[in-house]
Image 1 (cartoon, one colour):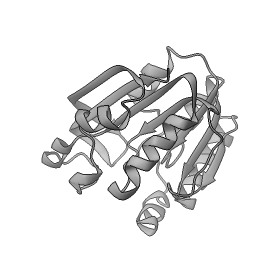
Image 2 (spheres, rainbow, N blue to C red):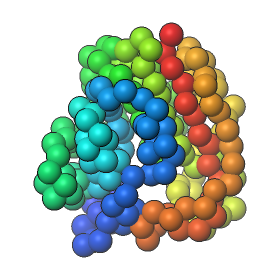
Image 3 (cartoon, rainbow, N blue to C red):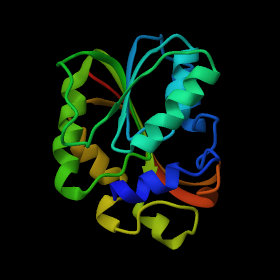
Length: 198
């Protein structure tokens, strides 16, 4: 899979667009800038946007090609981000070190998922916010992107279980229209979560 993502991100265009994810952008507007973690950040569109707003951004992905494009975008936009090339099982952070964690289409193998979700909760400061938008199992009926393995997709029930230690502010499943570069285009079905650490 690492080779797959490196090949995808080596394309000259921003394959998911240069603008931030709309859900991420809307939710970030209500939060005070602080330390932010973005997992599976790809080409850096969300990281660069958040840095513009004054967030201290840490991001990771296991694609070196994704990092190269993210840093190029950051330079172009005159912001700084800390972008690490790490697999999900390798990335570590200090407990209670982030004011927000954003998982925007951060789909991982099911063997890693529960443990990673627990880590994200540990990394949040008390009062910190988790933001998540990801494909729902019903996305398999659509052609607008996402994993084809249903075990890597997120239902609201799965999210409420994985993040039951947080105070859930929003949890929804809905059809949306995606317009994010070449690979997220058209109708899709997603799950969304906003939750805070008590």
